[in-house]
Image (cartoon, rainbow, N blue to C red; front, top):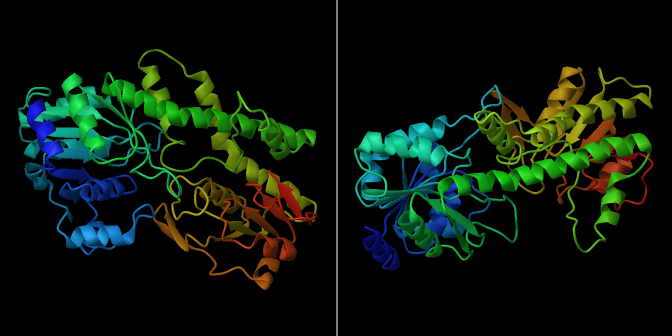
Length: 437
């Protein structure tokens, strides 16, 4: 089976399937198709399927013309019918892995997708889970479902592995194609074949590890590392404010050291699909082993509290103008979870807005990338544009995303007060009405 699949990879005879056409799945499907592998994408959302099959792009990291050309050439198609699994040799599972309302891992999308794949799985197929999850998911859950549902044996009839997605929306340098990949299969043969498949598509290096659990833990380490360090600077930001010290200047000074220090920056909280969620996956799994991840959980508590802290700081700023949070007119600028993207998954700005609503402030938002967003089933619309007269109508402007296409000098000139949680206004000389986190 190994030699047969390696030859099919080399000859570009592998048919590829991608389950989940979101921020991870669609770019991966496009790269597979661009590399010469006929690709079928699957998603439960019919609107996404319609757009893909019409060659219309909806993901920032995908080049519109690439998608259109691939669809027109018959190299990429999309479906809502899971029976496509019978037609493919390689399946990448790229479905969401959120947290439930109890902050515990919700792997229902992985489970349901795997159950459907098992119904149609054929011999000599490669299955790779890319969704971020806790160590053990591939071997304990996915393998069991595939074997029981298909009657096939992992390692003999099909190969299974884990290769964590590494997607940074809006990154101008690293995309799916040139970002290094980690691969861990169940058995050496599986790892070799899966790695060969990715090497045939991507420009980035492929790093092979000894098991899926290593690859699963590696992914969580990447994002927990960032969570902890951001938690550290967020806690220092709170302390520095009490001490009358600029945390931003402290970090710039520390950056002058050419070794042993990497700069992380404070903000209103953490956003995106991975960094705010992955530590919860690990702490949940650790309890199975009677282990308490104290440092990780401490950083999570700090980061989760930042939106509330930002509202508290906003209240102190308003107090100087003899204004209460209750009834104050507040403009939040930027609801994306990071600069210059239209992605608001887990955005801390939304929690900041919720905080202002809770204390009965009159809060509105502006984001040139996100004219509207949906939260808890409710649609919220931003103000269409920023003008001097519009800005003057608010008691406080709170900057929660460092978009580069916002006129911050205009905000400074017309705002009564500005709370800049991202230090995006650092180069503005007149700072009488600006306060930073």
